[in-house]
Image (cartoon, rainbow over all chains, first blue to last red; front, side, top):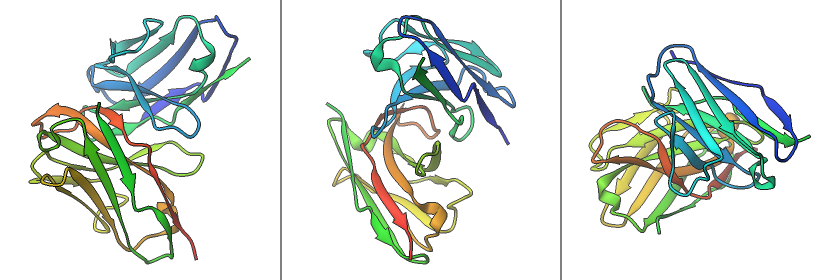
Amino acid sequence: EIVMTQSPATLSVSPGERATLSCRASQSVSSNLAWYQQKPGQAPRLLIYGASTRATGIPARFSGSGSGTEFTLTISSLQSEDFAVYYCQQYNNWPLFGGGTKVEIK
Amino acid sequence: QVQLVESGGGVVQPGGSLRLSCAASGFTFSSYGMHWVRQAPGKGLEWVAFIRYDGSNKYYADSVKGRFTISRDNSKNTLYLQMNSLRAEDTAVYYCAKDVGLYSSRSNWFDPWGQGTLVTVSS
């Protein structure tokens, strides 16, 4: 059974700084990985699929990388609207989410 | 634009039943698989169930298998989740989400999601 682990659980970042979020799979999921953003009281929003392809309308400051078991979501210069919880999801098998990383204002 | 609107949540006693609905619009509902995903208060996301575009195959998380049933009515553009034998640990916001795969038999990523409906299991 695949386990998806996100780190860190909480990331404190100042506006304008770079944020790097990690997602690790316990076994290879190839490039079958998506990232979502969730703000309080809202549904998740798709950011990245195929490990590195931005969804429609997602700003270029969001980028994804990795394959196999190690993945990274990078936000190049944090804007106020980017403070949220981020989840990775593998779809190599039946869907499984990581535990999430909360990006908070430092 | 694509829109998913869930309804049917509420408070139910342990052992009780509830049926959730998800009304879809803005896309050809009968061409896409659909999912239910839940989120317990203050917790992360948990996939619950998937149904193929034509309803011919259904898949469930182990945590709900045998208790929950996913179904769809393509003539009404509506997805359902029948939840029986509810437990306290089923308390969550339930989201419906569209799979991105056209006529796909497997799960892909989800886009978009509905706004969710809260189910509370409590005596």
